[in-house]
Every structure is written in structure tokens, then in C-alpha cells.
Length: 350
Image (cartoon, rainbow, N blue to C red; front, side, top):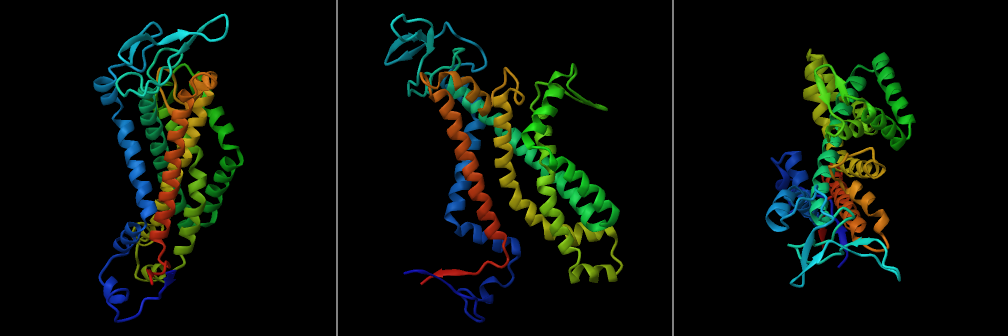
């Protein structure tokens, strides 16, 4: 039968107050999330992608027995029990040039084939996934942390402080994301010493460089919704009661306001991770993200763009990984939002 929305009734142990009495909002949210099978499936998919990506060294060393960062154009592999060269004779009548070997579908021998440098595409894809996930998760955490701190300051003190911080966010927001990221990355990549801020020194080849760049440019995207929540919570009666009791600003911010706006940050976090992974892939594809000999999903797609007609799996495989990761994070974010919505009605199947 069709799904029917039922309002909780007092005294009914199945869906009334007796069932939720004594449970914290976080326990209720976790319970709602546990009932969302689509969100749980997305979480499982994301965990599997993370686990396989971070197991890249195990695969490369103990399964494929290859180094995906070393060129091996003269190397060989095993296909159907026969030793074959990684670089095969080119096609056409004249047989000019060479073409890397395609997928062998043997997990031990170039499962997804080779790229133009004789490197194992499957191993590079796993290593690239680790880099993309590290940058995506790290930059999203940086953006959410900085944005939350600034939003708490702006929303609580309001006035001139709010105006200055909000206008600063507007200036950053005014620039196209990718154009701003490309400009900053180009400047830092061409600097002789990379990024130097006091005792902090980040070389151009470090993953911290794209992580910091992407994290900073996305601060305004988290700042706006969190600031709006802070302004709304700051006018609630319980905050006014705390002020009347003589609570300090520190207690008001961290004990009264922050716990009531942290749910907004939690909902935004998986969505921001998906966004930052896409941004990192785009920057690496353009050559201003992860630098050689490092690998990311974006750099592997760039390596395979000239092989789309002969060895399409070089570019298709990391593209599929990006799609699955971003899709899982977006669905998970929607599930977390529904679970944390205090106005969600209890639904039972009739």
C-alpha cells in the first residue's frame, strides 16, 4: 500500500513520545539516517572507494608488482600466459608509432592497461584517488572550519564586524571559482620557493598547496548559510535568557549558538567534499593541481585525453570514479539533511 504520513500520538509506544523519550536529537537523527537505505548505500560506496584508494600501495606492491610513478615504455607484461610488450605497434597501413597496451582484465597484470609512459593505469588510478580524496576532504574541512569561525564572529558581534567580513566574502565570491584558483595556483607554482608564510613553507609539489587553495576559495560558500543560521539562533529566547543570566560571550558562542548551527556545517560537509573533489580534478586536468610525478584522477584523465580513440579506459576509469564518489557524497548529504531536520514527520508503511 502507499506510504502514509502519521503524526506522533501520545501514549502510542510505536511512534509516540514513549518511543523517543529520553533520546537525544543526535540519537534520533542517527536513527532516521539508519532508516534511509539510499543514504546508507551511498555511505558504504564512499567508504569502499576510500578504502580501495588508500590501499593503493598494497595493490601496487603485492598484487600488480609495479611502480606506477616510473616510466616503463620498454617493459612487458603477461597476457593469456604470453609475454607481450607494453607498447604495441601503431595501427593503420603504415603501422607508425606505438600504442600502449589495453586492459588485460587480469588484476595482476595491467588490469586497465598502460598509459603512454608504460605505467599501470589501475595502480595510478588508486594512487590518484588517494590524492584526490586527501585534497577534497582536507580542503572541505579547511573551508568549513574557517567559514564557521568567521560566521560565528560576524553573526554574534554583527555591526561593523559583520559588514567587513561579509564584504570580504563578497569580494572572493565575485571571482569565478576556477579562474581564481588557476590564478592563485599559477602564482604559487611559479614561485621559486612555493608558499612561505612565516615558519610555514609549502613546496610546489606538495598536496597541501592545492588543498589550501581550494579550501580558501570555498570559504564564502560555507560562510553565507552558516552566518544566516547564527543570526537566526542569536535572536532565540534561550540565548536572551543566557544573556540575562550574565553569560560571557565565550559561553554564548560555544555553548549556546555553536551547538545549534553545527548541523548546518555537518550537512554542508559532504556536499563540499564532492565540490572540492570536482575542483581538484579540473585544476589537475589543466596542470595547476597535483604536480608530476604525483597522480590524481584529474591528471590521469589529462594523460588519457589523447588516447580516447585507441585506449579510452585510461580516461574513462578515473572519470567513473569521480562520478561515483560525487554521486555518493551528494546522496549522503541529502540523507544527512533529512535526518537532522527536526521537522521531519514520522512515516510508517500502512
